[in-house]
Image (tube, rainbow, N blue to C red; front, side):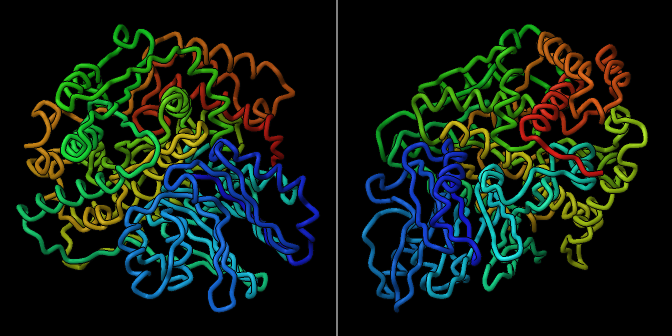
Length: 612
């Protein structure tokens, strides 16, 4: 994994912008702490920060090759999981290779197939290829959107980067937020509309999209979209296919030339990955895997069961450690550290985010990075295989709203009166945009048609928020985290799987449980869904509340002009009066306070101008 950035401009001599280009590169150094590379000509600059994982000696970037008189240069961030198959195919077409890196495979696949190369790639990636003679830039993002790629286009040029900060550091765009951006932050956040970078003038390629920049124009193509197809497999065949696809996805992602470990929560998803990897290692490598879990000081003391989090993790973690024989490590986070890490987690995302769910992951990854460079994690199974309660609650299922943020009353309440009058309408429009774009079959039952809509809502919203979080918070420490459930073959199959098969035996992720019931301990396989662990310690609410009151007492801060201070104080005094979470199952009163802290830090430290 790496960080990439670049700049094309026909009117500026970029070879004279070395100080600015260095600043852009340095801003994403955390993504690639091992090496830096650059390709700079008068009208183009390609920048690369490398986190060395595969072919450490020979995988340096930017990487160039010449074919039929044209020079192609690539900057690439990602991992390709079918490298061997594509390399073999290209060799049969006469291409030679001087490295073992997937970067060279992607580069030469583009040379051979041009934009159609994307149809062959299975992996998580964002990359750009520049054709020197044609002055043509090809930009691409993986099908699922695991790896980010932002850009700013202006008259005469384009700037791109793995992170927004690289673009801002060019000095060609100011950090401005308008009414649309404020609606995103206050009424949709921490989610954001696909392709939208919140800052005015900054966009992002959406999952499964490529773009060609040529002659001052950017043309975008969505090469991957969720398409409805008749499902032809029986229940038994589906069980076999799920076991094969997921096992294959996990085993493909065990390739690394640097140390690798595994996130283990004791839940179904991480347990499948850890058990599959442990079985593979015992057979092929004769070594135990290493696992990591996260916990908070005094969480066992304050944990309370609820519909979203029915039981604690630690008993199940012990069960999986015994089953896999892993070398296990528990990282216990102090609540004060989690609160103060809210600030660097904004820097990691360049935006206010998923508050302590971000900051705790950032601290967790920082600890893992002391010994490991690559980890595997169980993200996205819930979105693809109906793991969340809102898939199974008939009272919620057919509501015309985002199920993780069903109403905006608390969001409206904390805002200054009269501010963002179209906020609720904006949310409804974004919801309908997604639902109306859902591909269905005439033969779909009412429940299957709605489940397709729910799949799209989860895929393009909730899941993207989690992938943003995982990429930024891990790469901020130079830790590559792979997500096997995001294999596009699994995604396509899950989209077309009838509800009665997906919810096998009436359970969330029922088909996955059935597929792995003879591989996992029974108590793990049929454990009720439990989310990423958060702190339950009241000291966290106390710390965040005190900080918020301090910030809002300073009338010079931008946040003071946006929030209704008395309503915020009321929420602090009566946190249990909050009827529904701000976002998902994890953002309640303490997290709303944390979100205000992040908003303030973002406005002030990014020097954001507000246009309303």
